[in-house]
Image 1: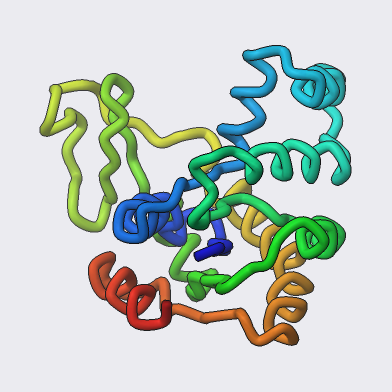
Image 2: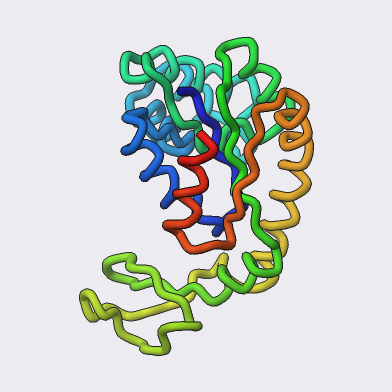
Length: 204
């Protein structure tokens, strides 16, 4: 089964991606991970991507598509895959359609106001990375390791609102594109984590 996972920052994509990957025995392919791997290994396409990243520029669509295409040719993708973080643009989606067929596009649909509250209330342990939320935790020390709890710089309200606006503008055309192909499945991402996963499984 070939699946794309869409969802705004903080919508819970990471959690659901791990579960989907385990249940359907398919690799979870995050574009960020493939980029890092190709750059680390010094592959030709990795070096191309690094040249743009080093200049602080966005990696062009054709390079991103090439990296994804190479990854999808690997053995572990034989029975399907879960794409996370790709495609980000309509051009990437159209390029992907020439490489592979997509069975389902899961869109974790969530109210942006709720997401903003979720992200700005998030606190992280500086030592072990454990995540907390001010709605249910008010301490200054991690309950797991005793490390300091802090708010990430990109979780302030201005940055969060900016990230969500960019995401919405970028993703709208993708949602329309996959909806027209009858593969889009909207899942209420504001529910409990287990309920979200249950709905994804039912949909698939």
